Length: 448
Figure 1 (cartoon, rainbow, N blue to C red):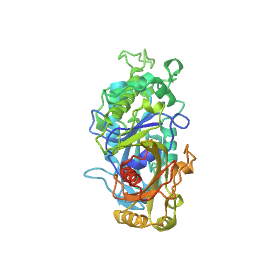
Figure 2: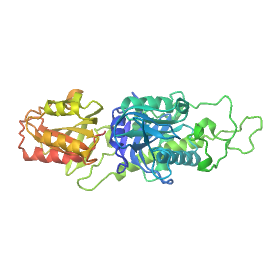
Figure 3: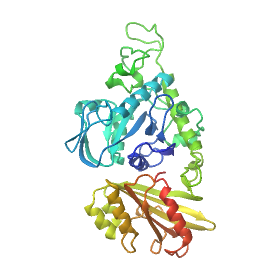
Figure 4: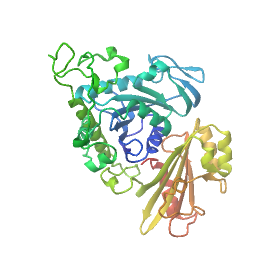
């Protein structure tokens, strides 16, 4: 799966969504597809933490911020939510905290079906946070194209398997580009090589699922309030006949095949546009273009340095990925999760290795406690993602690394522990260049 950052995150759980999608890996070995992060489609007044265009479906992912971590979340789509048996309410007249996001997804799905005629399913994921151990949806609602979850890689994979099944219609590279372009007409064009790596098909190899029996037609225009919940995000085979004079006995002269191409093209266009628009000002993270990422690792420009991704990972068990006094603190604190990222930074002829750990807590006070502890020499720290996964081409030593502990730029509930060291020469904790690279790394996205 290819991730492309579009804009500013809309919810606190956005980083967890990003980490969960990142952990699925590049290419189609696991899932494939293209994920647009922090995207606001044209048209409806809605923004999503991610829109994922898959070879066999589109997922609209919206973050839902809860008051705090929970061991159990009861989350009916149209009823009151309960966090560890405490009732949760939505804002204004919303039934629950996910009502607005669900309505936004409904409007966006209806618009995409109407404007593109897409024939792959569109579904919604309400991603809750800062941490939820178990999410319970009523069993009857699991037949609907909506999932409520905490966005771990395993939960996302399970949702994708249910909402975008492999036996459905396949999206071609042309259709993927059309979907992206519909979402953003200014998006750059992704080459066939980039899209086929993510599982999209060349037209000659594409297949279409032909329904054995065509259901009764639904109106082309339907008020949002009257749109049936169970078919809110419609499967392509449920589209009405393109010819209003279709035979009364249920046979059709043609199916609406155009929409699928349009939707896929829209999504592809959005992704490319996001990449072009990502050229931020000095000090702002800027992902590299998707075209260049076919041959080069993804990188982010921050404060004059280029941080090239080596490895990333996400874990719930913070203590398992730390050591020393930091580990001891996390064993007794309520930690929401830990993100790990490894990068390289070129400085003239030298290359610095950067190891980042971002740890999330329920309150800023807990985050400050860790930051103060971690700033003390010899207090321990976090493991390195690339070392854990053997991803370094040249393994660095962080024994004498420069160290920086700071509040994350994303949230005051999160702390970043950053180590920087030279790959091919001795390092020193007092090295001014390594110190600058470490401080700038507080703004580096922990994503591909």
